[in-house]
Image (cartoon, rainbow, N blue to C red):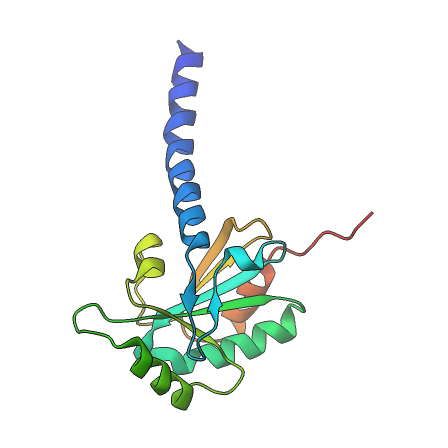
Length: 167
């Protein structure tokens, strides 16, 4: 009887994790275009830890500070900056790309997500930056939300999985 309860409890706990893994795999395979016309995806960064910064298009100014700080704290970190585009109005991706080129600092690439795949998959409120930390296999290992602060940046940096040295 106890073994059966333990199995049921284990299934109840692991079921949602399996669903999230399949969902993350689906999202990892999706490719998005940035403001320069380049295509990128989570899957293209396999083999290295990644921080995905997902934020509403009107709040993209917050990305640069996160990227600059975390790059200094975690050498070799890779970023996917994702602009969560509005769904309540028609979005012209070419015009949005031109606007991003004008408003986003050089060197900061931002993927455009017109279908809100990232925000929907992870149930994100994109009024503030959401920082999703993935390990080298693409598994979500931590999530954070908020404006840049030194304390939050330290927490995010500490959550980034370090690559294991080769033996």
